[in-house]
Length: 593
Image 1 (cartoon, rainbow, N blue to C red):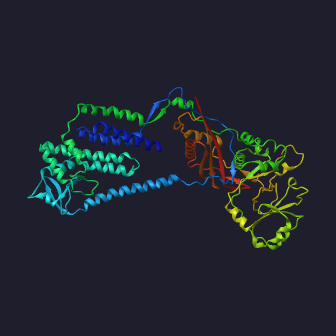
Image 2 (spheres, rainbow, N blue to C red):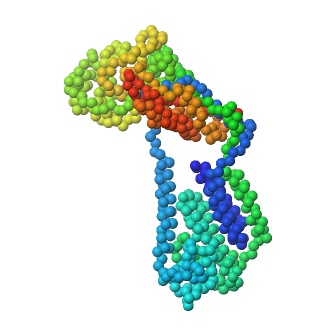
Image 3 (tube, rainbow, N blue to C red):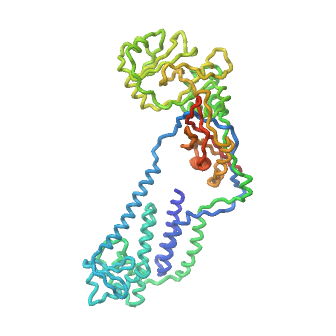
């Protein structure tokens, strides 16, 4: 859309600039009028025209969609989508407000003219309104307006009447209304304001030319115009007899055409052809058989398991050496998020090969009342390791507090890797003071990364398949610190949602509607991930993309929306219950030279 707007502005500017440069000073007024009208319509329509052109051989934009693995469904996801302010909605609102202002201004001007009170007469088969107020003669649509004092003894000065009659017969008001409405909806085009001035000026030249041809007394007519100069009115849609650019009017009355005037008119045709070729929207045409041969195959990009292992390798051999605590502290937030995204794209077998697991926390921990009995229990150093506001504390420190000083607590069982001579307690308790809990609520939710308990067994070099119950959590509320005692991953009894006909059917449907012509062919390799939200009834209720190229993101999202229209998935289940899921579908598109 931005490209079309820019083309409209540039095209209208060039057309108007050439008018001022070559035609404004020529007495080809009728031609000038239609040049301005057609130039205006041309400028606003040609950027919307699309033509097909042959594709250059050395720039084959063959788009290949590489097949990949079938993607897993993410169970009960929290789709991490940045909450940014949508400026496009704001710009759209501002645009329509300004458009509304200009439309109301046009309506107000029309009403203002219609409300003028006066005596209606028919003079030489023309409708004339004789106004009681002192005002310069003007015309609007098919009516001429002038003061009573211009009508003496049943007559109106022939020069004034003829001038306004020309405006009426040549329908000049329609030109003005056209440009006013175009201006109302394209107020952002700076050249539209100069267009209106050029058009009204040319209307005056047309009327003056007719008066002089019939009157044949230029000096007498010029004196009449000068006598009317001081009479002013503020009626924007009208043609006023005392047109304010008096000097230009007087000069044009005595000016002669240049010897190139006729040639300039004929040069307008190739001008519009050149502009059309430059501003029209060109797309590459392809032979149908070529399209068939180079048809898009669905993109299901690079193996997520390979990329997953590449991220882990950035941190050396910490996982191979079972240094899970060090790995947990070393992983950056960015890599933690990437690992989580890739984890849910792995197959069940691939997940079993990694000691990591991830899960989503749907909401912040609710406020939990702490009792005095619990505080007394937390003081037992043989049973609990105590953390207050995320920091290790002595158990006796809990006696300094009252139950009402806390807003939340969380108890977790500690596994062998976390137990040492210094910290032998079998359980860990994390408590939050009121102030710390408020900060916690405002803090952005972290990504929780855990380690499968069987990975902690000393001497094990391989990771056996985990059971459904891997960690015992005494309360359902998650911890807010970096402790490894995190609730277990989703149930192993989770069954993913299924697209009708399977993954291959989904690939074929998306590739069938994907439009590769929107790309130039020099973008290289483009990647994105399409997220498809599927509710408990199997209905797709959310689709969005995450990638670096906005055009590819937009086309991928559009193609998936079209492909999935009215399609019903087989819902996902967990422990036999229907659940929400999100299908994560990585896409890659590369252009062949």
